[in-house]
Length: 200
Picture 1 (spheres, rainbow, N blue to C red):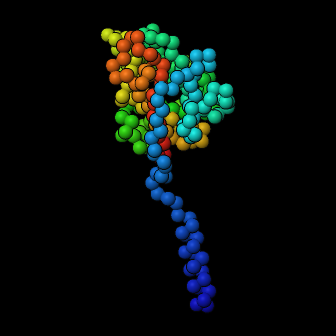
Picture 2 (tube, rainbow, N blue to C red):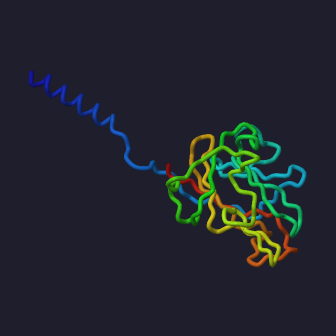
């Protein structure tokens, strides 16, 4: 009888241990991955990037859901008034279901998705990354005096990939060698960007 009771207690203890769920956010690799001077092919028109693979996807290998975000080729100097950064979903995609939202925050301060953030699929008539470069809700800031464009330091793109992982993404410059004070004649269309995984 005693032996049976001890055996039953052991079984209950093992079962209760196995049913425990981890509390709080699941730990993720928060290493920041950075790229510099990435120039899209002018004939393809885009540079493609995969967050989960942390790599630029060669244009001849782009298909299905193997990329998450694309940045356009920018033609020369001073005439660019918008930069259509697009996610692999909706009308802009090739089979991905990537969702995103632009939030107002510093890249360094984001470790989890900010509260009240609503992620959604991309759309040409309502893009996740806003096209205007003048106004309050802008991803790129247009300097009227110098006719240059700069990524807003206070805007970060939150992305959920097809594998349901969350990432933060920010473009830090679009000029060759990330010039601090570019002019209208500075070589443009050289992407400098960074990304890191964040907790769910």
